[in-house]
Length: 279
Image 1: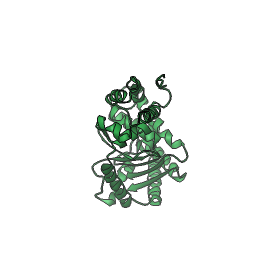
Image 2 (image 1 turned 180 degrees about the vertical axis):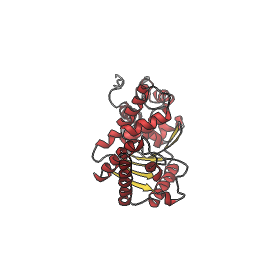
Image 3 (image 1 turned 90 degrees about the vertical axis):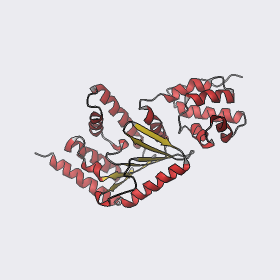
Image 4 (image 1 turned 135 degrees about the vertical axis):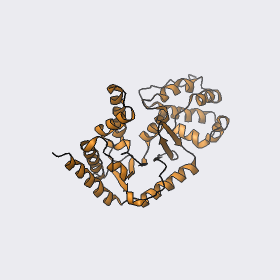
């Protein structure tokens, strides 16, 4: 009997690889827990691989080929599923983000990437890489805008962000860029596409003063948490750790302004930037 065919990289390789993994595992009669034991990973991690929410690493692929007797299929194809235009520490989170049903995000100093406009993103990347070639910056901006297109779908993912007031007050891209960015966010809120709350300066100390949080939920896999810093990022699936970050996010929402008051503040600050640009 012929083995599975190599995957087409132009399709959704991670989803296809996950489907093949589930098929191969069930064919030999192993549970997710049983397959995970020789790999020293949990059954829930195997489930995430099968659902396409986690990336298959080469070392896992080789071992799975041995256990499932798949003739090197996973070792060959995990390279296709691992290709990404994003930095290594961020790529897996972006891929999970693309198939999430719900995303909750707090960013302390910036407008979240999914909500950024072209001018805003360009200003951010130029600040990060002041000596980079213009073409390199344009590529980064294009990748960020491409991510934001997941919000073109009218319902999925559900997106809820808590914005620190600092992200409204710091004039990234100058008054014109900020007026445009905040107006874009306002339109998304008014069209009921996203939920946005502002954590005001007056809230004082809060539960996430040490960094950003992104929570992602899926139709057929456990939730993930992503935390990042300068040039680093961690995608977390430990249930207790994710639960702790969920509590942190809930506390942020409780300390933030209501969605209605937040929208009023966002639009007021956008108007201030627009007037500041007038001669």
